[in-house]
Amino acid sequence: MKRFALLLIALLLAATVAECAELSAEQISFFEQKIRPVLVKRCYKCHSADAEKIKGDLLLDSRAGLMKGGENGPAIVPGDPEKSPLITAIRQDDDDLKMPPKGKLTDAEISDFIAWVKFGAPDPRGPAQVAATPEKRDLWSLHSIARPAPPEVKRRDWVRNPIDQFILAKLESKSLTPSPEADRRTLIRRLSFDLLGLPPTPEDVVSFVADTEPDAYEKLVERMLASPRYGERWARHWLDNAHYADTHGFERDQRRDNAWPYRDYVISALNADKPYDQFLREQIAGDVLAPNNPECVIATGFLAAGPWDYVGQVETKSDALKRAARADDLDDMVTQVITATVGLTINCARCHDHKIDPISQADYYRLWSVFAGVKRGDRPISLEEGRRYDAEKQRLDQELK
Image (cartoon, rainbow, N blue to C red):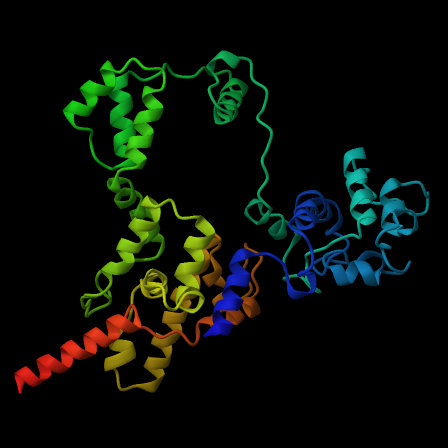
């Protein structure tokens, strides 16, 4: 179970493989934002495992490929740009070695590569990459998060925050103008339905319309975010991701009398503004990371929130049907976790390498094996609760006798 937790946490944090554990967050960020996108866009077509013909026997889609190099030896010498053939090639100083052959990199991109090699060419990629086309690897969802600079706009007076600049820039590019600002009665109704899922009370509407303070709207937002209704409203979206239900589904559709603590955990986490990374860790491996914390044990209900074929896994006498039902159950766990946390449709790789996302069938079954030790069933939230349950059960059994 500990191996399961550690493996899956490593996957979801999407940090690096073991060989790169000593890299700093700054080094990883620089590579992911400045180096990898250029390699994918300008180099992988000829220098990756997916290229129709690998040019110069040089692979640039893994750190191992960079260090091994091709016909001209290692592509880089960490710490020394002047001795690195890759830098010579992208500078295009040598008439016999100009890369990329169709269009030189920008000065800024070349400077980034030089800086990268100078501080040791840190590369968080493993010895090999998932077999996928360059287009797959360049998916926007797989890039590191960056804070883009807000675009310039003409109507600066309309902008109240940086998000407005992005909206206004798109409108201006289409020769459109923003709609007029909503009146206060409309504004509080929209906000209330959005944050709480409920209409505002007549008293709240009258109070907000009459509030002339410049920060009246901001105070209204804070009051609604502090309401317990906020968690109840927005928990539904995460519970949908988790496939949560109070019954098993399938033809028996039996009740799950003990499913509700997980539902309440999600509501509580949102109302408490729990950090998202902690929210994920607790749901995937809370019982291992904090086995004595009842909240973390409850959180792992995420793994068993989806449909469960009671007939296929319990009632049937056929071993083949039981194995098939168990396989479907593991597929649901894998799909649920990856879809909810990474936004990829990994279940396509159950039958073949993914046709769109960069996921191989081998990777799918590696993750499948991580969940192979997870079984569904009721469990005590804590040892203390388990002892109370056993004592009460013993008392009732005696009373029934």
